[in-house]
Length: 209
Image 1 (tube, rainbow, N blue to C red):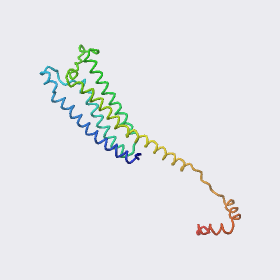
Image 2: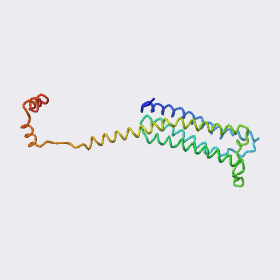
Image 3: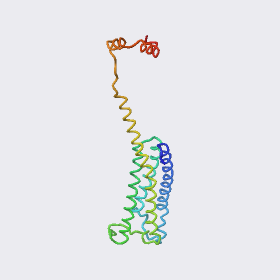
Image 4: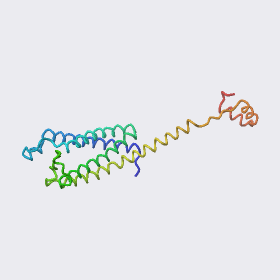
């Protein structure tokens, strides 16, 4: 079943709206971790404030994702392939950021990276029993996001093809040669026309004669 530009546009607007709500939820969760500081309560107030190694990337990712989803909604309505491409590229960058953060946290937890003397904190959530769900949830979310991106990529490809065809048709129309007949050529044409052809020309354009 094929889906045209209008169908894909509506899909992009719907996905942009859904992920916009997800970004707002993620931004609210980051604010909760910043001001409520639940980690301090779990560690019996032994922590020294929010862990910006986790909150920093999360804040940046949530804000950029919020703006990118707004851009997807507007770009789909305007049929802008550049804005749609920005959203696609950012989502792949977001996946790279998440898995880089996850791998970095695991390396800290298992002792392969030990920068405690430089002020780096240990991975708090890695020691929790729910830590395995972070990896499973991240894998499922990554697969789901890639599935959601595929129709947007198709929309971008169709936009490029549609704009290229429009550009080619306009260039052919603009640069098409215009043939003008000189008065001598018109006189020769009238001499060689049969009476039936002259009558037909008068019928088609009576104001000329």
